Image: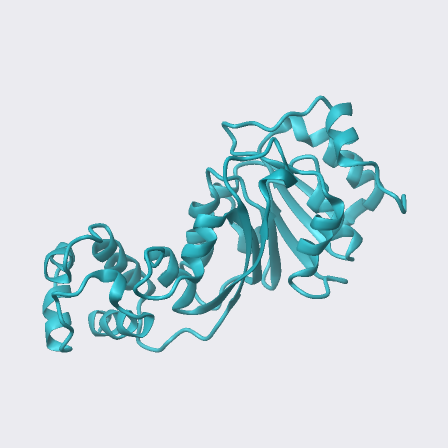
Length: 273
C-alpha cells in the first residue's frame, strides 16, 4: 500500500465527486485532521470500526492506517468506486455496505465491541445518535467518535440551566459520558458548510438501576417538547409524570432545562416501577 496516499482533492476530482446537499455531505480534505480524529478513541490496532457516510474515503483511510478493520456504510453510489480502490489496497480489512445507516442492525453488522467513528451526514446525525444511545444496555458499541454541527455537539455536553441543555444532553449523559474533543473550522470542508463543526467522544457508563430507557425517552420528550412551559404543564403530556414529580417534592413551577440529570433519573425511576 502507498505510504503517501493520493490527495483527497485529486481523488474527488478523478471520480467527479461533489458533496450532495440532499445527503447532508461535506467532505474533509485535510489528512492530518482526519488522522487526529481517528486517534481520538485510542489505539485502533486490530480493532473494529463502524463508519457511516465515508464519502470518498478520507476518514476511512485514516482509520485503516491506524490499524483498524473498517465497516463503512455509504448510501451514495457515486462514492463507491473511490471506496473500492481503498478496498483493493487494504483487502478484507475494509467492508463496504451500500445502504441507509438508519435501517441497519449494527449489532449484527458490526458486532459487539466495535468503535463508531464518523463524520456524520448532517441530515441524519441526530437520528443515528439517538438510535445508538437508546435501547438495551450495555450497547453494541465500545465508543462513539462523531462529528456534528458544533451546535449539536454543545447540546450533548451541556449542563443544566444552559440554553443548549435538553433531550440530547440527557440522552448522552444519563448512562454514558460525553466530551467535546475538538472544533473543526468550516474551511476544512468541501464545500465549506455555513456552520462550525465539532467532534464529540462518548463512552458507555453503567446504567442506573431501576430506570426503564423507554420511560426516560418518553419523559424527556414530554418535558422538552414544550420547554418554555413549566413542568406542571409539560408533564401532563405523560400519564402519571406530574403526580410523580409532586410526590418527589420537585418544584413543578421549574422548567425542564433546570433539572439535573440526577433529578431526571429520580423521576424516571419513580415512573419505571
